[in-house]
Length: 214
Image (cartoon, rainbow, N blue to C red; front, side, top):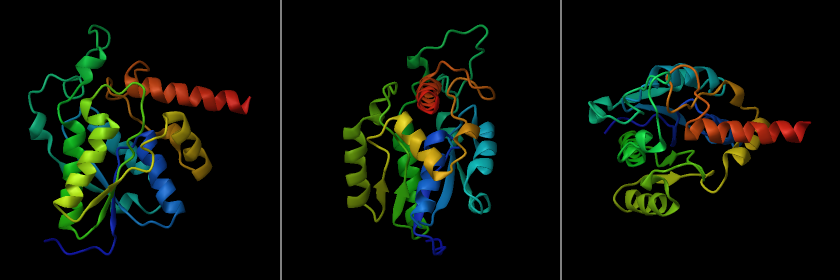
């Protein structure tokens, strides 16, 4: 077993709006954590990681840990892995499905945490109207959390699980999170496409926030 770092929590972090907000939410509650980025072969991994280093709370970028499990999805035709040419290719939400993605992220996070003597993994999964994955349901997350606790020492905590992107964005603003600098597009590795489920959720949330301020 790896020697404990003295930090009891791990945050699954991607540079997106939700996990960035959660990092500031944790800091505001004096919950110390190790940010963990998981490279599972997503085409936007380089952009996500670069963004993450910029949007974490001050002092946390130097703590960032990166785990690579990209070989798991080598050759996969999901457009999360095999980036589409958006000038030529039609992309549907079915094309963005990646089997067992959330299961992989949470189990890798839990294994990473337990190996380092941490007892909690924080994840920023939300209640999205546009998520199509079977492993993105409340039932799935609840059952997995119980399983990981029963067969290990790690708790999975999802403070935003019942919140919308809009509600999380409001928390982000009140917490001082730089949500405008985050990145979470599923279809494009560099410039957000504006049409994938993540982009749609994000744009709707920011539009509602803008209307509130008018």
